[in-house]
Length: 139
Image (cartoon, rainbow, N blue to C red; front, side, top):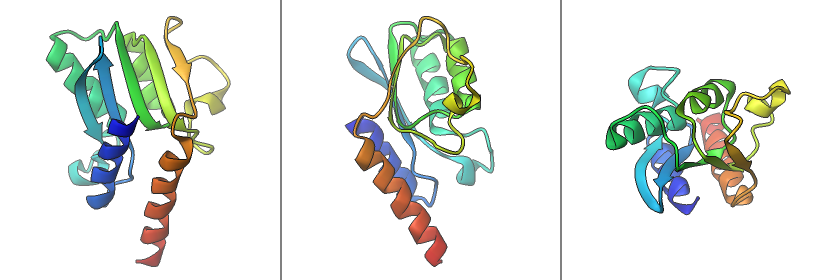
């Protein structure tokens, strides 16, 4: 999660919503990403989506079995749906997204074989988001 936070800090510096993601396969980081929605003018350019693309390219296939996604914020329904199709082994997220997280839908969006762990470095992940939105309000 510390590596995902590094990615979130990069997003912060680029005036992107500071969400970072890394994908680890068998103990090796194979993808690093952060939000690029502003730079790419693309609402689908979330950190997770960028990481899925990078990891799939690295592995040479669309399935991310034996991979773990670390992301600083609970995935939204779009990213959870994409995670379903990747067949990730596990998702680890920092803080919950109380407004747009996939768990708000109340139905399973992830692949049945995907384990989920939340609350990892939760305060650090929440604080960078608070700082970002505070900075945006001051502009």
